[in-house]
Image (cartoon, rainbow, N blue to C red; front, side):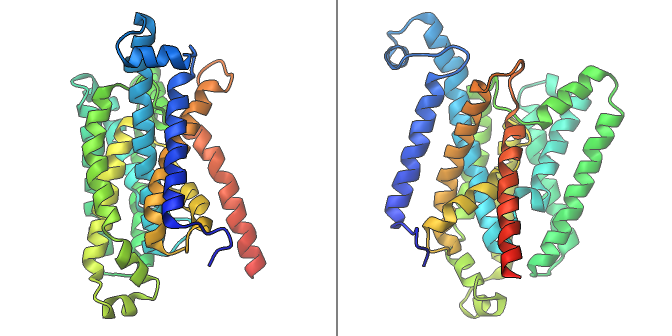
Length: 333
């Protein structure tokens, strides 16, 4: 038992309160700060036109997307770390994030994104699902996590090569700049249209991943013991991979490539639980929502000539987690 362990309800309530406060602060601050009274007036329909436009056209969809995308990435990271029994696992380890990014890059490269706002996210989700099919083809019927990791690395490398090819052959520097900007990840200028596209995918992915808590707990005893306890490893893998592909694909489609959230959050949450995979899933989702919303607030408040990209900031946040894990490993050995 961890010395920092909290009762499950207390942990979830604390994280939910943190996410709620982060969301409220995200609505208040930005390029133009809004007072709480002005924000409430705009929310009730009695505010001035500028405050109403800022709230409903800019900040509210951005905040809700930050909460939803962060929750999906945090949950996917916790589920994959539990299944692969690898503390450094996150959605990118299976190639899902890279594949979704490739789908979006293809939409930008061929000019398809200009046809309709839904084309870009649909191609991202489709590419994530195709990566899932390729993952199953490469991994075959093997139930070993190592085989799945190696297949995921192959898929991620292939998708990364496709992205590099698109950048290399980009017809003009403006298209390359648009691709690079999207790859750095951001929630800037997102609308409710993006939210309605992402939410069904995130909702389905969340349901599929939360379904697996008990099976992941059984898997900590080993694959043979899990099967003896009635866990169908094939179905478990299918639910996890489909949930991650659909959920992360939908999230990446609207936010761009945002890494390390799925890596960071489970490590932050784990010390406050009994460390079983099922105990980490829901707290990681709520913690991910809070972390990404706080990070998005940070990119707006950090004084820079151009707004800092969200994926850049989360990448810097991920470095200390890697270093902490490395230091722990060195002490063990």
